[in-house]
Length: 347
Ligand code: GLY
Image (tube, rainbow, N blue to C red):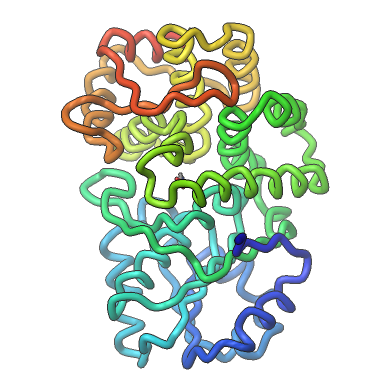
């Protein structure tokens, strides 16, 4: 059963979720942005206004052990018990680290995710994956720990800039590719230049359905959930590299480029249709630009891909497609094929 609610009235929803439930103390986790922009809207509810507030620095670069310690320490020093709840208000960075802090504090307390970004709403907030980055590797440490509830108010997205809307939309492209031709064609119709929030909400609800069905079938990612990693083997390497090279890219941009690379790999290895590949490439080129990986970076990116937690034995593990909606998990590729993908992306 879905524990995710898309609503225009987050206060009533939050009241309804917390009212019948005997949690003793409420702790609200925000980052420096959501503390300013989103938390005041939740203060209409007295129990949120009077709750404990924890704030960590914004940005994925802060999704590490230092911020995690801040959260654990605050919980510990302010009387959190196993009956306390942590409400994570933010994007994927906050729901990931907050979920992990909750999953590990006193061996686990409940958490609620209030997703304030499209990226978080469409992906990180649902499905129970929590974690932090470690030693320069994305989500290297983590746990499966589903939120008690996920609340999404699309009004929060109205404050997002176009880059952050695009970043979230990349995960919607991924869901469409693994789902069906109908979802794929509808997604490609969406105009990212002029956002229609009503249509975005409709697509978001459909995306949550797609993701929840997959997670329900395979909550711990032993099979079909690997399809949600489409594009991410390349994406995580490009994203991790962007941090170490000093010009960070938003997750969704890396995902969009990773999808093009993995669709190309799907084309050369599994016969993914060329027209769909080109539709994807042009949509991504138009809305996300391109990632030109100079030849000098290939080895660094390959090294990062070898560290990917999805790998089994020494092979780099990919989820590929033989067609839109036709998933092939546990695929591997040779070094030359991987480099060809980067060349296709840049061409
Ligand atoms: N973000 C991919 C998953 O939830 O499995």
